[in-house]
Length: 246
Image 1 (tube, rainbow, N blue to C red):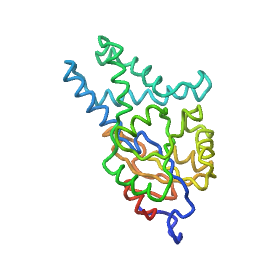
Image 2 (image 1 turned 90 degrees about the vertical axis):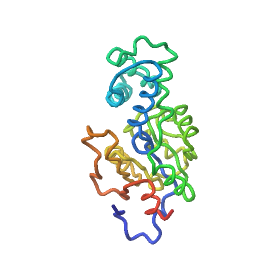
Image 3 (image 1 turned 60 degrees about the horizontal axis):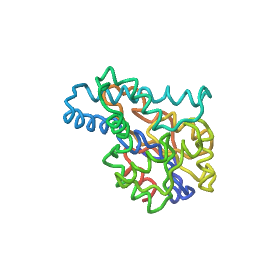
């Protein structure tokens, strides 16, 4: 896939910062949760379809955030929402005998999610030229721990917790851009999700789609390809780095 803007003399020369969606774009949450739960189950004599568990846990993500977006409840960071969502699954997956410490260990899998194979090579190349920041629904501790665990080269952790909201609320994007002292046009939103990019583009950010057609495995029905003519469309993070001259 190629950039739609082929007339630039120097690719990305008007961009100062790259803002990244994290879950699904930077890290592979489905396989990461599945692997960790398989190891945990072996140690604790549990049996279940742990890939289905990962998908079921993730399926509760948007409804939980929507309660905050709608004003039904005040801002609650994602670690709390993940823990509440986990509680809804413990009987179905026979986790109700586990201690609070064990459940907290499971909940913190989100802090240990592994990057896609191309993520770190691509991001380190991009980091030579651009400021890199998260623009994620993850809370600060979650993203900071994930970065330390994997060596993700953030210059700043922005998004949900600093702005007290959840994407696609406009203030999450606009306040994150403002915190960098930049205009929306100077920022490139990088995401594997077309809806995320639509929200960013509507607010004046430039957009880069990174294709992750296996994020949800065989059950994936959306975000299998770029659905619009984004500023950049890439098959991997290294492909995006190449297009941006890194």
